Amino acid sequence: MEVYSDDHIRLTYTAEQSLLYAVWKEHKEYDAAAVKQAFMAIVATATEHKILNLMLNFANNTQNLTEAEYKSLIAQLALGLQHTSTQKIACIGPIDSPREQSILAAFNEIKTAIPLALDFRFYSNRASALQWLLT
Image 1 (cartoon, rainbow, N blue to C red):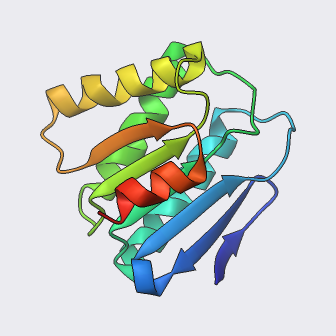
Image 2 (spheres, rainbow, N blue to C red):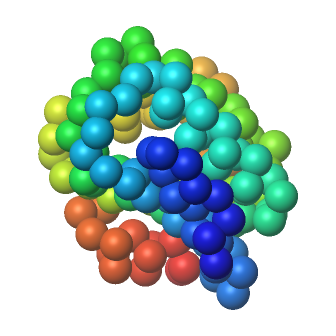
């Protein structure tokens, strides 16, 4: 069931799997403020529905932010999810792209600095991500 949608992101919730699926809608320009708004919607929905599993599909998005912007945004998402039921985050995208490596590095740096009970992994496709989330 769709629970949120704006110009950039669509959130779909599946209660049986306690799964929130977030997909970036289109190839369009955006800035860090748009990503922050999307992440705030994810945190609010995760809180409201007691989400255990989160799948982020930003694979169609090719725009890059600065390393500082990635760190700030990932920190906001991770800290926002810290007080929710969310346990796993699967991100879909090209695993070895510089952008995904920057995102993963930022998350790992934050997780080292602040103990988080979140497991975060990248997958190249939705099926693999879903399999991991549901095990």
